[in-house]
Length: 205
Length: 202
Image (cartoon, rainbow over the protein chains, first blue to last red):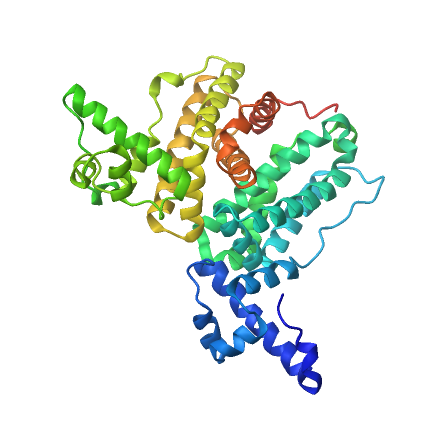
């Protein structure tokens, strides 16, 4: 693992800042150009550091990647109140919450997806864990759908995955801005609302 | 896009057909194993046991190979449906065909997320064709709803399912999606997308 900058004593704050700056630059570079397509040298020069300075914190490029993995995505998916009904408004809120989280964590998610498609085992495990958390949170919201809840959660996940990946493929680096556009959010939320057949109790006025 | 690329040649003799098929099979395997960028024409030629120029003769570029692999055999799917139930069958059969080619879909998704312009153009073409087919199928089945909106929901939901499967299961996604539980899900998604699942009653 990377050396602990805390061991630098009085310089520890500065060490933390440098480490964080290297990680931020590496996240963007790996997400955009891929792990293989990025050199430690290019990360160092973008940070205004020597290669040796980067290697001090992260002995290999792989250590950098693993440090990024351990940071994880930020932000929480909204939790459900136990007795809450499943309404069209709720479905729209859940779609938009997902879109906001995907904008906030764009570099992380893009990096994970790229590495998953290169069959990286760590990235695949991280993606599975993060989808399991998403599924679990959705299950709480969809509990009111009764026995069809699991199928409707799958439907929600497939549709949102399709709309958001399609948008990412079309917009590339512009994704975070595109996914926060209110017109896009309205369009996707509407499509998912129309897709999901709500249980009778929830669709009553 | 298509106009910029010289057309792939068709084989004229049985030997030529066999050669072309060997090249396609080699390309299919290599795209699945090494991805699109990781595969060269030379690797394909070596595996197929032919020369580089032989590959170039039938397929001027890697995307011509890819397109040839992804040509949907017409006989597998009837383009029309008389009822909505038949429409579900046809749409599910179309998805089965994509699922059988999951390894190629995975290689292409990798290119698309890297922003390779040719792969994005390929997706745009594929999406337009798919939407056109869905509109024809739903019209022939006398679908009463908004056909364009239904095609939009079908495209994104089924793409999302397939993309998720190739990221979760890698090149075994095709086998996974053949299992009854997934086939049931696909039919359920299709029924929801065309409003056949009752909104009343869970």
